[in-house]
Image (spheres, rainbow, N blue to C red):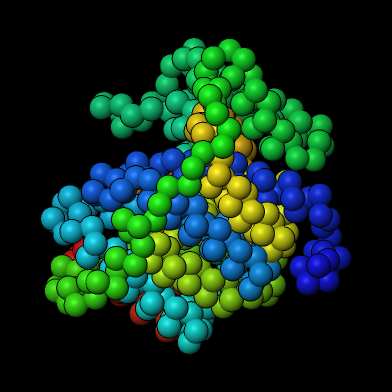
Amino acid sequence: MRNFFQFTERETTYRKETLAGITTFLSMAYILVVNPIILSEAGIDKGALFTATALSAIVGSLLIGLLANFPVGIAPSMGLNSFFTFSVVIGMGIDWEIALTGVFIAGIIFMILSLLKIREKIINVIPQDLKHAIAGGIGFFIAFIGLKNAGIVVSNEATFISIGQLTTPTTALSAFGFIITLMMLIRGIRGGIFYGIVISTIIGMIIGLVQVPTSIVGQVPSLEPTFGVVFQHLGDIFTPEILAVIFTFLFVAFFDTAGALIAVASQAGLMKNNRIPNAGRALLADSTSGVIGAIFGTSTTASFVESSAGVAVGGRTGFTSVVISICFFIALFFSPILGVITPEVTAPALIIVGALMATEVKHINWNRLEIVIPAFVTIIMMPLTFSVATGIALGFILYPFAMIAKKDWKQVHPIMYSLGFLFILYFIYL
């Protein structure tokens, strides 16, 4: 087992990997509650969604761990489940069964692109500076999510966002968890992020801010309402609207996953010569889980940026992902205690992990304006648009123009020019 996951080469242990897997799971566990809530608005059975969410996370995390030896968790994407429900089903009036079939087709295309190594090729030709910008931008994005979940930043009609009411009990609990976690990390306590989540949860239950579960074991809901529905509507997807939806699923999922893999590989020190080891296998695992997830009955899956929480406590191999998969399997039978893992409890972990990831920006060549502007736009637009893919797309559009202006256009790979052009068309037409 140690040889298979390369423990010696990556300087890790079973304890580190297990702790990392549990930490990432705790940071991702909200998806088991939130995904069914969002997708049920589209008319899908909430119980079946819970089971589909867990099963897709089990399969996806296990695949990327065993095939690519990557410490990443895979589960239904938060951005794409909202797009599925509010834009496709409610906004465009498309039945959820047909929309889910679109997710399935997008997953099949993803698998083909992965097998042909087209996705891997695209990731490898991204300039090193932009890769650092992507990793750093995701750090700011994750921190912003944590601040929002904690209630430290809130929406404001006049200024878009502003500071929240810090004396709100749940916000105060997040602030307490943040300080405790920060102190443990500075003191060099391994697993400080994980311990911070546990301590915050216990304190929250003691003072009544975190619900104490009334039971431990729950029945696994049936998959019957959603399982295999995609095979019944394969003939209904050949319309301009559905094809546009499929392309959007492809675009957002591709670059969400690419961003997450780049960020985790950079943070874990796995990037070699501007390349991600086993990137092709990681992308194949991701795309395969998307196909399987659609068959189970959930929207597009993606590699979770919250995986960085596990990397921060020492996760370096696919054994972390195996542990994540096991945790999701256990969660299938212990659904009543999932309410314990609230956004306020995990918010401190996201803020701190975001800060750690943001250090990637130090590797960007800040002395070259043609690098600085595309990199800065990539970074800043991720949290401002609440989308990793949008930040990447805008950076990719600006980079070729900047290099042409500098008369260094020959240094830009033709694929980057093609992507920049496609992203312009994407923003114009979609």
